[in-house]
Length: 323
Image 1 (tube, helix red, strand yellow):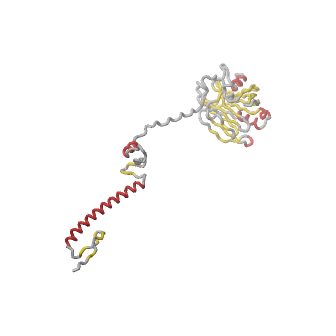
Image 2: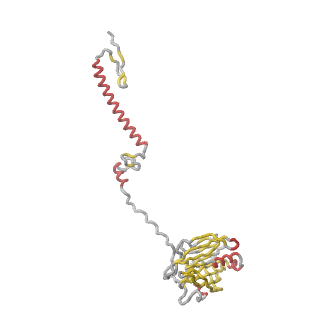
Image 3: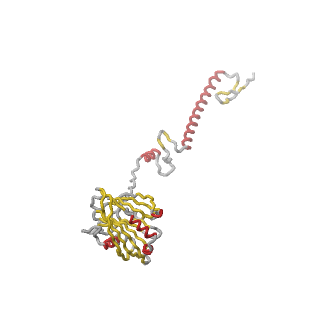
């Protein structure tokens, strides 16, 4: 009789057409064996597929990590000639760097000291001891001013190590000598200036007894701070007066000498132009050292007895110090 054929579907696959009347043992034996082989093949394919997906995920995510080791900074072998194996690269990246660290730049000193070879009787910038405090204040006729409260280094070989000082000046004057630790301000509109200087008084003399000519020689010496960068043509001390002031001292209030001078001087510019100027000096003495606040201004404007003269006179009048 004619044998019918049917398609068998086992384990998700179509099998070849078989006779219905084939031996059941064949179907239950051979076909089951084929199904097991196919199941094993499917398992292998699934494992390979899972491995391929894992590799693809690592390639897509370059910042991934394996077994807790960060390999984001390791070059892939073969990407660069001479890069070595992954193990070598891991060893290289894990080795601490032995490169020398840059040496930090030396810190800037708090103040600049004059050369030890310089004659101490020459007036140079008085070194500051600490950063000053600048505050706003009001002068006559509601003039805006800046109040300077700071500290100066005491005289060499003196028990007085720090001097507290204060003075006032126009709020828009520019500081020039801060980097070097000195005190110097300038009015950029007309060139008026103020300086804080110090010099040792001659032996066997005091602020009150030293000659007024000594101040001119000390302040305008070519090696001094005022003459630095400018050409002083001539100078002459015109007036000098001595007074006293009650100041704060370690033992309480005490009286100290104060000296005021007016000096005429002239400078020569780079193109040979001679400029007449006027200086006002207000000085105090501490252990045979003279501390001076000096202003310099244009002679024509000073002699007019107008706003510019009032400004420099107010500056020297405001100068105060405490031991």
